[in-house]
Amino acid sequence: MNSKIESLDAPRSTDDLEVTADASRRGYRLFAPLYDTVFGLSLHHGRRLAIDALDCHAGDRILEVGVGSGLSLPLYPPDVCVTGIDISREMLEKAARRASLRRLSCVAALLEMDAERLTFPDASFDKAVVLFAMAGLPDPVRAMREIERVCRAGAMIVVANHFLSQRPVAQLFDTLLSPVYRLLRYRADLDLQAFVAAANLDVTASLPANLFGYSTVLICNSRRDASRPG
Ligand SMILES: C[S@@+](CC[C@H](N)C(=O)[O-])C[C@H]1O[C@@H](n2cnc3c(N)ncnc32)[C@H](O)[C@@H]1O
Image 1 (spheres, rainbow, N blue to C red):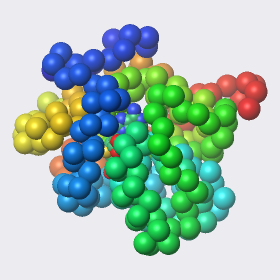
Image 2 (image 1 turned 30 degrees about the vertical axis):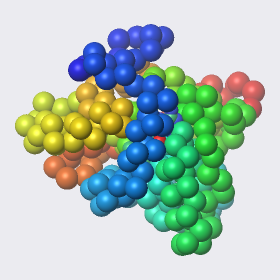
Image 3 (image 1 turned 120 degrees about the vertical axis):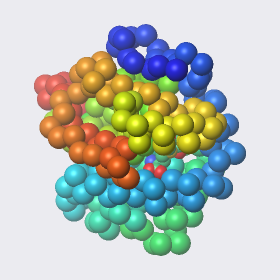
């Protein structure tokens, strides 16, 4: 299984793991009841680091792509406007319950939507964040282009993800988690350098996150052209 990104235009695939929106939907439909137990605390440090890095200000319009069960939502300050999108209805229902039970005033909307086909007009958001969802998208580069399109020029985009690692501890985690990753169609072998190059990301910082630095938080500035309309 190797999902190094070779070009901007070819759909990304793994040798033996088909990553499609339908397969992910099916996986999360089955796994939604267990998601928070397995990936709640274990990814909390990365969520916290990523949202702190967003440097939220009152009124910021923030897009969260692959918001899932909304574990990140309580981490935002109350005076921002977060729009979360996800392809899984079951995960979104959990997010909506969390937002309602905890009266999270930061949550502006939770919408069922494909990260690669965002239905927002250009420049709708000030910032965007993708938490542990990028490696589960059929075409992460296409999703990044869409995110840049719907954010204003120069917007901060923060991506937290696990990337391919040669470190034995990371490989051990990959092996232990491989049945779950397979169900969720999540690539453990997304190559960081290849992704950054293919998506032409302007990375300003890269921070290790979660246990043993298993994940990375990438802080980027959108290269969207300010002269474009929107
Ligand atoms: C590993 S979970 C991360 C959830 C959440 N961000 C967190 O920190 O726990 C990945 C999420 O991405 C969503 N997802 C998968 N494919 C997607 C797509 N094409 N468009 C939008 N969301 C997608 C899944 O439904 C799932 O909720």
